[in-house]
Amino acid sequence: MKSIYQLLFFLLLSLPLAAQDQVFVETESFQNKGGWVIDQQSFVVIGSSYMMAHGMGRPVKDATTTVSFPKKGKYQLWVRTKDWAPFPKGPGKFQVVVDNQPVKMVFGESGSDEWKWYNGGEVDIKNDQTSLTLHDLTGFNGRCDAILFTNAPKFTPPDKLEALTTFRNKLLNLTGTTANAGQFDLVVVGGGIAGTCAALSAARMGLKVALIQDRPLLGGNNSSEVRVHLRGETDQNHYPKLGRIVREMDNGDPGNGNPNGNEYGDARKIAIVKAERNIKLFLNTHVYKAEKEKDKVTAVVGRDIATNKETRFEGTYFADCTGDGTLGYLIGADYRFGRESKAETGESLAAEKSDDFTLGTSNLWASLDRDTVSSFPEVPWALPFSDEYHIDEARSDWQWETGFGNYNTITDAEKIRDHNLRAIYGNWSYLKTNKKEKYAKRELAWVAYIGGKRESRRLLGDHILNQMDIQEGKQYPDGTVTATWTIDLHFPDPKNSKYFEGQEFFAGTKHIKVAPYTIPYRCLYSKNISNLFMAGRNISTTHVAFGSTRVMRTCGMMGEVVGFASYVAKKYNTTPRGVYQEHLPEFMAIIKDEPTTANSKP
Image (cartoon, rainbow, N blue to C red; front, side, top):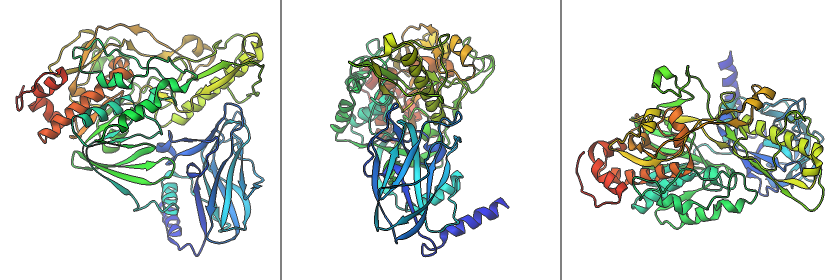
């Protein structure tokens, strides 16, 4: 019966538009976004980016656009949205305004936290070119995915992902309109510190490189959108050549969550990349599809998070620097998620039983002193704080963290961010109301709406780094990146767990010091996808070892190594594994900054 309904739906889509006129508007494509921001973090769940009114309690400026209609007349208006904090009703209220006439229905307060279509009633379209406005009412993260106008009064747009994606692609004319970016020696997916360093390293070795990033900025967690400072050392290397590019990208140490976003050097990072003639930079491009032949990636397809235009990238080699292992997952690379057991790895720090526990995601925030007293709206939908438990801080640090196995850090990214926001706003409201002597003249200056992730998928290579490798300082022949960070595995803060059991948002840790050790090159390429490198927090480690390798200066040096390895692979028309098996002395000579001897086997 289900298949019959699906068939009828697809037949309906195939009818000519003469039978019904439909106008589909993706909100992220609005011409003037005003104070609204684009969020693409949940593309894998809803199949799209969306717009959000992130005003920290102050309504943001309207987003506006102009919509072309095939004919004038009566249309049903549908709005795809959700109530992100339905306790019982959330604060994300907004209006849709059509040709300066607000639709009667207020959206974002339905009491349901599921993305779905809401019928806004009938509108009369009197102009071929009609203005459309999103009007925020609260400043508390109201969100809108898409708006549909249809002159078929009994038509209901689909909510299920597969049907919605087909519907969306048809009305946006996305099917068969993919642009071709060209052929590259190395396609780097992910423009955090690891991916940017990989692209720079390969380009400077003479390779033609595509660097694809799904946000408008490079740097990932070290960008002004997330604001995490760099950790790990570059000056304790066994091989001093590694870390030179990382130092170029390093903008000093502004700390975590600095209210001044300029301290993170966004413009410098982009300028460094654009200065390289061998790199083509593609910002705002979310890779959601990959193509392969046998065990090789042949191409990836990315969608612009604002315009929805699609671009295809062909490559000889690919590097997954997404953090989430997105490309590896799309192409079928072997991976792990969560903690291994002691019995599996032999690690004393491993869990007794394997599970899906991961380190969490942070949304940092900061307040600033002002000259006058300010207030903050009531937030009955936020997490509740009290004299007994609150966090008396004017600025966050790394401890503001949600995850810990309660949420999947990939598929629940929106829920994690929203939980962090409920904690931030709830605690801030308590401080403003109950600690006026300290906070009356302070106001929120910045709250991250992009989550800073720590852990998700780890792609498996020919070697899986473990606790013993680290603590025993094992020196493998292909030891490359020198890592210096402690084994730093977060867990819910016990006091936070007491008051928010199962809903923790604050972390603790125990730093287990290590001597500088090297990460084998074999951790930086896939064991079953023959032309796939990886660099960053998604490399081949156990959960325990990941606690040490995941910091950004270390990840950046991984990117540098991947750039060198891709050069050797291209020179000999071999695979990443072939670099290790057939050309290790020459590869290591590059790492050591020594003269190379070609064609020498280990």
